Image (cartoon, rainbow, N blue to C red):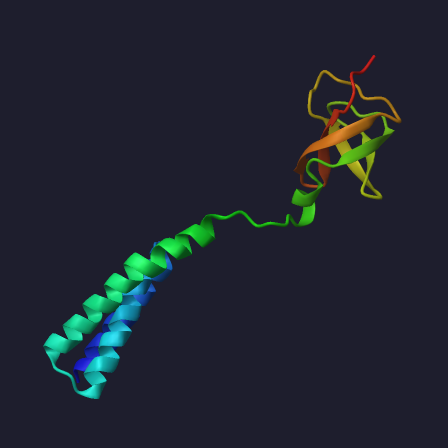
Amino acid sequence: MAWFVWLLAAGVLGAAEFFTLTLVLGLLAGAALVAAVVAGVGIGVAGQLVAFGVAAAAGLVLVRPVALRLMAHQPLTQEGSDALIGKRAEVMQEVTATRGLIKLSGEEWSARALDESLVIPVGAQVDVMEIEGATALVYPRELLP
């Protein structure tokens, strides 16, 4: 019957991890599962507590730092509109603070000037600085006349 208590504890800790996302409670839930297996084999309470302690310590000392380090890395590839930031584009229709049109990666995009005081003429090369919805905020690559 002790295995059921450990299993219940693992379920509660796992559910709590779902809401906190700290990786601590989830690793303790795993340790409780180890203790449940030890209890199911028939080892006494002292052995169950030792198994729980060893599994919890191993998880917190060995697994958690590696998992946190892996989660902290930014993805190597950018997707969607994020991949367009920093790209060069050509102005197809004069770009002002409120409207404009550019050719970006073979597609026409609505655009606005990042610097609201600029008017970027047709044919100028611009860099995409941000994407807001379906509008690119651009800045000229070269000094405007």
